[in-house]
Image 1 (cartoon, one colour):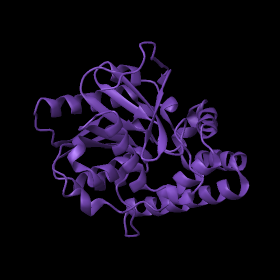
Image 2 (spheres, one colour):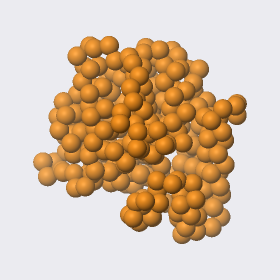
Image 3 (spheres, one colour):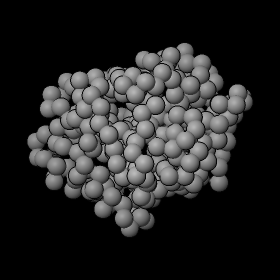
Image 4 (cartoon, rainbow, N blue to C red):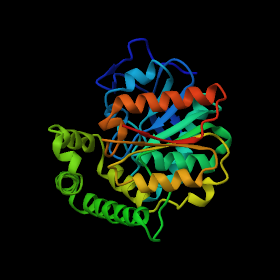
Amino acid sequence: MTQLAEDTAFIDGVVASMRTVRANGIDIAYAVVGAGPTLVLTHGFAGPTAGWPAGMDELARRLTLLLYDVRGHGKTSSPEDPAAYSLPIFAQDLAALMDALAIETAHVGGVSMGGMITAQFAVDFPERLKSVLILDSTAGNDEGEGEASVWEAELRDVFGQMEHVARKYGMSELTDRQVRWRYENDPLWKIDPEAEAKARRRLSWMTQAGVAGAAKAICERPHLLSRLGSLTVPALVMAGEMDRFHPCARQAYEALPNARWVSVRRAGHAVNSYRPDVFVQVVASFVEDVETGRDIRGEFVID
């Protein structure tokens, strides 16, 4: 496996140095850190590798982490063509990155948008999986009934507006509108005095084309719940109890035949931000259970 220079380190959850490789026609920035079984982790929207919260250093003590910037984010290429962005393309990028690093199989997971990419990767490239981890996310995009479908419809509306604003008005106006939306829709966001600064910093790591393209990909993502049933590898699905993705995550868990469900109390979107210690323990323990051949199935609520 390709390793980073010895001076690579985490500072408050941030990877200090990264490398770039040409894969699937773009330059993908990545970092490989830690020791143990390899876990590929895909970040959320506007949250590239530099934006992972505290706790990643502890996870890297238990696992080898492959972290990377998704197309349109951070130091990875941001094509101008809107057609260059979709969940299947994001999954192809990940497969090409693993090929470039000679990683045949790995534990593959992601948070929020990263969980959507993970679900797409899992159904498109099941042979590359040792396990799959869908964290604070959804594998659906339906217009049916129920809490999950209501939230998925809101996601399409929100990200459709984001794409429109980014293309028509630019990044400054988009950032201001997103901050206002988060204050109005995420009660836990209001109690974090650094939340607004963090949100503005994350969007500063993206280009106008990257924001619009990633938002378009989220709006148009395939509905994958029916395809999850074909996966036989061990799966972890986790969500914070106050995260609006919680019912969506529950749907994904119920669609998977060999899965562990973890609901985390006192956590919103996402567990790694609100309760990083729980995130590290749940993820590392799951991977270790898979590696040792334990039965991973079950439902758990963590206080």
